[in-house]
Length: 89
Image (cartoon, rainbow, N blue to C red; front, side, top):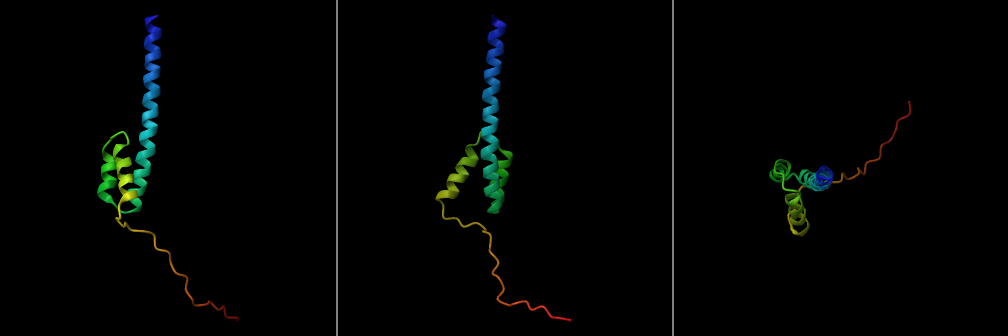
């Protein structure tokens, strides 16, 4: 009986650990993606190096949502108004 309880407890702990790892990977990935796209190197390094169970990336994403900080955004290239004319040989 005692071995059954130990095995059940280990399985429950393994399941909880797996769920926590998935949670952390998802939030860390989103935080790293946003920090990289906005060229926020210090925040990128903090999220990358500190394991916080997703708290730091979630806080960073909330900060980005409500702040007026303008990061580098993609600039769309304007199409040239010049028309390309092919010459006949």
